Amino acid sequence: MANDSMKNVLLPLIGVACFLVIWAIAASNIQTSLGQFPGPSHVMEQFGTLYQEHVAERDKATSFYERQEKRNAERVAKDPNYQPKTRAYTGKETFIDQIFTSLTTVLSGFILAAIVAIPLGIAIGLSKSLNTAINPIIQIFKPVSPLAWLPLVTMVVSAVYTTSDPMFAKSFIVSLVTVTLCCLWPMVINTSVGVSSINADWVNVSKVLSLPSWVHIRRIVLPAAVPSIFVGMRMSIGIAWMVLIAAEMLAQNPGLGKFVWDEFQNGSSQSLSRIMAAVIVIGLIGFLLDRSMLSLQRILSWDKDSAKR
Image (cartoon, rainbow, N blue to C red):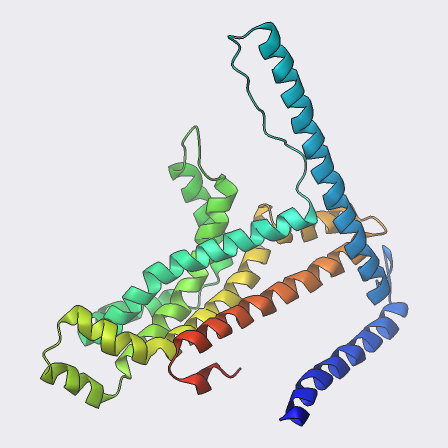
């Protein structure tokens, strides 16, 4: 057991070390129009710079609100009837801000898709007639890249979401709908397959006990289909994260994708290092999202073997 634990720690470290060596050697031999391709040390420096930029921007925001609060207090002291107003700080989003923007968007779209896709997948899995009716629609739209929907989604949201005092930014709604569209199909398909593949003996027991439909779904269908549902959810969250970054780049919506595109357009000597830092963060977040979903599967699934990787 101790040897296995050592292997599980040592082998990934060796793999990462080899990757860093190859990266450093390759980077030193690649010259681009913006200078030498960044190696690991340059990217690490940029992580520090990006964090310092975030701290500086937060200090600016704090100073802005403090000055505003002071002015309001002075106005109220002169005129007790004055109603103070607080304006929001409109400084630029930092790298860390954009990480949280992308995370909020992808998780919101994923949750919305799950709310729609899992009940629909259960219904399709339980009803052959419904499966026959809806399957052609799924097969037609499943291969369509979510980015192909982006122009249509943008126009529809612009036409429909016209409130003068929006709760959410229009760019957030566009990215949210795009993420939801790419999450739907894997979850619907895997949920329906899991439900339709339930052990016939379990279904017969439910019939013998004359369980009501809701009890049958809650006690028999959902527990049996959980492994398949989580396969679809893990596929969806990975696809959603990739699609979101691309959508943010194309539509120039706030988030990590826009950060990468802005740095590419900036073309400074530090742009490549900053882009590479963003690429590493994007990969790490994608990995953590998948591991989080896997951990949740281990907790909720009766089939622990399905959650080993």
